[in-house]
Image (cartoon, rainbow, N blue to C red; front, side, top):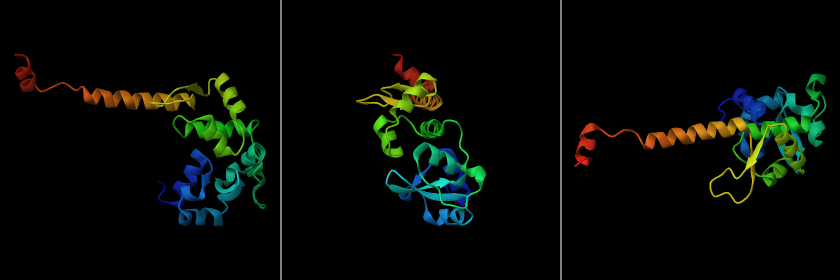
Length: 169
């Protein structure tokens, strides 16, 4: 959880847009006043985005940024929707197509499949007890696997010699 406006801005740059209930409005006020963050309408609701991403959200999702932003913030890369979806995947664990569609307010399955072809995403039944195929960034999946293995290793630590000696007979 961000504790300062700068940490909130870093979160916006790393994770992407935030809904009104996903951030502290008091932390956002200085960012909005300094035009480091802006509010846009996306998927029928207000979202807070970093000002640097305004062009990406406009070109990729049709979210109109407020006027008065520097021209450099309105420039987007060649594939703005792909970069938004990649960032969404990098900042979360496994997610379904429906969750991504709901987040972006449009069907992003073709983008997910294209990213899978480029080896930027993996697809499978990744969550325990999962009932459908999910998507995940390969690096996120590696981190989850390492964390799971570390937890399992802690469960099988060697026993003390005295306890082992009592067990042998």
